[in-house]
Picture 1 (tube, protein in one colour):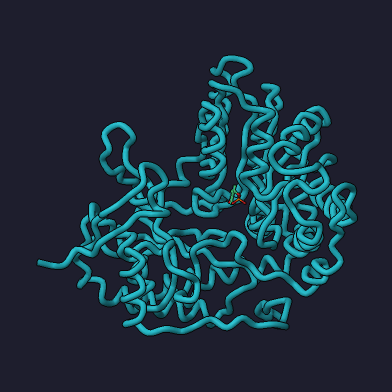
Picture 2 (picture 1 turned 135 degrees about the vertical axis):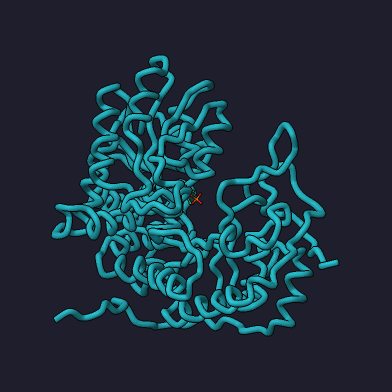
Length: 461
Ligand SMILES: *Cc1c(COP(=O)(O)O)cnc(C)c1O
């Protein structure tokens, strides 16, 4: 029998979301200066701003919230979490942190010095931020196929081994403290890295005596893609695959807000005792004592359960296939989206969707605003506004792609919500030729302007 998959959970509690009218939303987005970050949540019907910390916890996770051990040192919740991290990752040493970037801050404080180079696959922005903050350089070695939207590749998050080896061979010894591999690669659109690539990256790192760290925010989604796309892994369990992935690395940083299935949290896990010992000093300074590191006992308990749930096949199938369901609906409607679909988000290609809006009028932002007005859907622009201005010329930097990201929170929305989202986008797509004018910036911060930028609608003269 070939039955369709169904969610391996049912609903025990619901949270009402408020439908609103187009007229209300036109007014609200104007009051928010056409910046979706300025909208308060009750003005949003379906919130696809991010999949970070926005998922739903299970009853077992909520149960852990009640029995959390809030002891300052040696909490039972810490021990529960440590046991699960050891079992799932195979790493012996473990430090909790308050979220993913905090794990980066602590680990990089140990490993990075001025002038260093850290190769990786399209580093996530906080990772890059923590590297550049230390006057070091993030070197992108992602395969070229990752940024070519018309090519199909099952593992667009892969590292180009030649590029990596070239960097390791030609860089002065000691200047590459480690290589960081992000699974799945968020910056490349939630694209996975194959086991074969992880193995090869690890082998090159060993050859040059450089440690490999995994940015593991979406490690379970990556394992799902390996199971369904990579030869030889069909019959492996997700937990076997994740264990193998980590076996090629020396350690990891984790944003538990993603595949930890919790709303806040993170950790570092390591193989090397020496690095661990040095990291504990920074953990105590920046995060908290080594047995809580910025997390409540109850939150560590919920994370322990979350990591186990996130590494079950049935959950991951529901998760990744729900995202793909939305993608397939849009493709069916002829809407231009990036393919293959990412594990956590669908990306609308605004250059193909609304080429009629001039680029200097922020076409991806204009499309994101339209999505909000038409359907109460909050998405996020990954385009010219996000790319900021050139620090020297102060001119807009126009990235190759103008995207609108629809990030899907975990275990939160139903397939009907996906149908609704697709229907709203279809409507906008059918009237796209009328979209002629976009927006102008009236106020912006010198860096990271997207969070606080104020815009005005350009009225057709
Ligand atoms: C979210 C994320 C981070 C940072 O984690 P936070 O919990 O948001 O601080 C780092 N790397 C990747 C790949 C991420 O997706």
